[in-house]
Length: 484
Image (cartoon, rainbow, N blue to C red; front, side):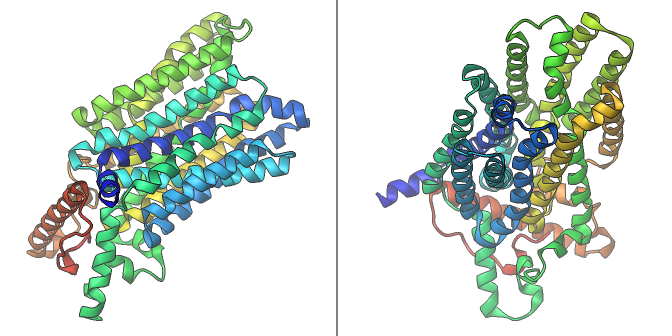
């Protein structure tokens, strides 16, 4: 029985499965509120500001869960955070479904959000650490695919069980329960185990801080690593990607989709909702296309091109809202709505989750990626809470002009700052994005290159051992282990 469990836990498909379940947790939890909000409003008679609180409570939890998840994963390992994700998802979904008043519902949606946020940190991280380099693009895309599938399922259920908000919330516990089953079998990340082994090996050898693993040196303040010279630029680039993911209008497009369909004359009965489901199907299909493009065209081309297309769509729809009306405005907006969604999913929508792990040095990945992710959730929270108020004050077209301006700025910054080697090798990307900061140190640069080459070989050996089901990894000198 022990050998069977070891064999199962060592399969890469199990790592991909946990990522897919994490994406389903994310997508369903954030998407189901669209169908649940109206019956909740009818039940409790809540005002528009309180609606915003109900919607954003899960986003606030996700922001905190994502941020705190980095520290949990770094200190205790990836598996404990995966367990936390499963438990908070199950408890939050069932609890909010049985809530009897708005404060209780919001509190339990906040707890559910902790699981959503931690899933967005730990699931892509485990994929980046536990699958072969040549498969990272494909396997990393599965998280975003599952998010879009989760949103699609939420939209279909919202139409199928219209008005039954309690059931809608409770069904969100299913992916959490499945994730718990996966947690029972999946192995700990070999990267975390290697770091832990290096720290344990260093301590009896010497008290010299030069030979102690980086995470030990920074145990007093984990944030210090984020401000080191070779980490600052990757962190800023990651925050830029978070801005591109949230502040260029994807949620606004989804929110206004039914309005756009109505303007086009699709306004009979459930037709706008059905059209919105068709849009979600398109959302899933374009994400699938991204899987085949990411390792063929490369991260840089997809991110830069996608950002440019999204910007053009924002500006054109802003123009349509001003110059056109009725069916003409509706149908032209529908065309660019679908183009925008395709560009988003083929670029930042799919790539964000694993690119933020690729651009960071190994020593800061487990802390830096969740911090970047927390920025993404913060932008999502701010936009969701204030979006309707701003639209009411400034108008729809003004919002899309703003989105277009942000998209244009992001496109220019990405062109000049995205490393050209992004996705080809973890260590090459680190050198590129940090502007080869060691080249001013003469021959030390060549020495560092050899050290990094050795570390990359050791990491690949660890992954091979993981896939083969070995419990231990071969020792390497501590000073050569996972340092940027």
